[in-house]
Length: 409
Image 1 (cartoon, rainbow, N blue to C red):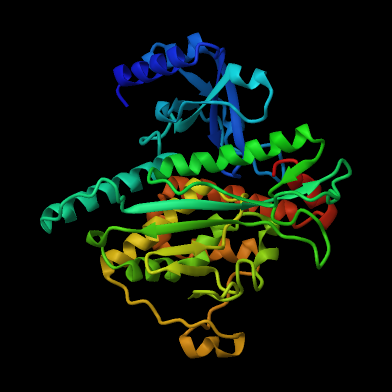
Image 2 (image 1 turned 90 degrees about the vertical axis):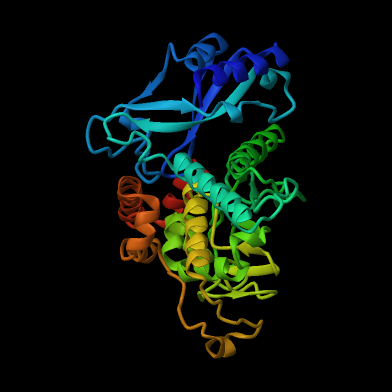
């Protein structure tokens, strides 16, 4: 974004919200933890104008949840936050008036020592991929002399978030309450991913006002019959000029196992690799909730192998890249039919989902195509963080691991 445009956006926002005093600079780290630094509105304008910047040390970026607050950087790494001023919004979580003194903006993260400073930025990866989709859509419409339909974007997305309410002792709260919410389907996918983070913060803040704690952790309570929480993404491919929706889905199905490394990104995420959750077998169905992908309509799918421990920017970018590869290669989609487990093999569903984070990470490391989509720098750093989590969490008791995860999710 050009400096002049950034200043214009910030000035317009502050004029329309004169009560704002502080701006939260926010980013999501490799472990899907929302990090925040607050600046005054005067400094915010200086950053937008290019006369100031906000620098971070390496201990703000590479922090495995399992070892937090200890971090594991490669060495001294200068980082810088680059706000995406299009995401500037009032912080309205909760009902207290004090929240309206604050605004927030999501940031790209730049590693200044790299040849490409944004090579490790998950938000930039998704942004570039969406730009590529947009260019492809415009080119195909031009080639086919199709009239652009501004009211029918090529991609639509929404999320379901599941959460559990806990009391002060971290047990399930004994009250009736909403346990699932859904973000509105929007055409601006970067905004949707940010809204997912915002919704989670709002849920937590509102629940604290009622003296209960909301958690989106995949395994919030121990025990065989305990609830499990996921985060399902609904995706629609609406523009026929992009290619056959079935080819997009075929590309995604082909990469389910390595994609689990990004979507089921926590040691305990794999408690959901069972029927009626993320599913046990790689495949797709319609009403069959025992599979990781559910086709809601001819152009709309529900991807169930995701929870809020995922870095959603990274997962969505990899998912779209897989679908795009399917469109480009015009993959054929294996037929599917809702049936019991005994009949899955008749429809070519013979591959099991990863049972552990280690299995998912190994699948991703064995897939050079997925690595090329994510980029070497980002992929290497992400895998390093997750392997540290596997090592450390594997040495903990279930209860110690649960409490550690509840600190963040």
